[in-house]
Image 1: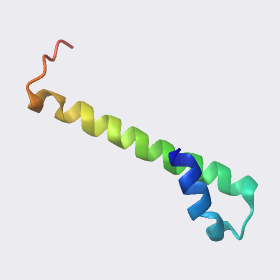
Image 2 (image 1 turned 90 degrees about the vertical axis):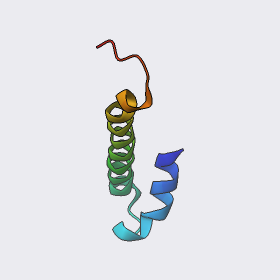
Image 3 (image 1 turned 60 degrees about the vertical axis):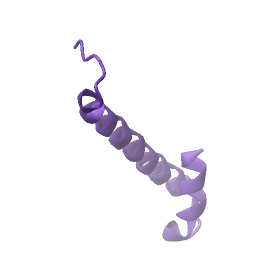
Image 4 (image 1 turned 30 degrees about the horizontal axis):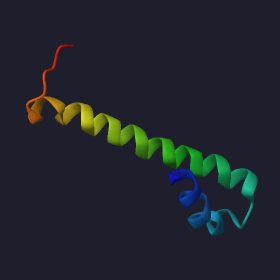
Amino acid sequence: MIHLIVVESSASWHGGFDLYNNGFAGGLSATLVISIIHWYKSNKSNEGFNNET
């Protein structure tokens, strides 16, 4: 779902070339998801969860 939103909003950046826009949007979407995962993992111990790793 994130990828679709980014593809539609960034199409004008590439002049409408969907081939290049799809990879660009995939990279931006992956960056966002990975950043959220890293943020969650770094704040997990602050929330009082059991950290057994």
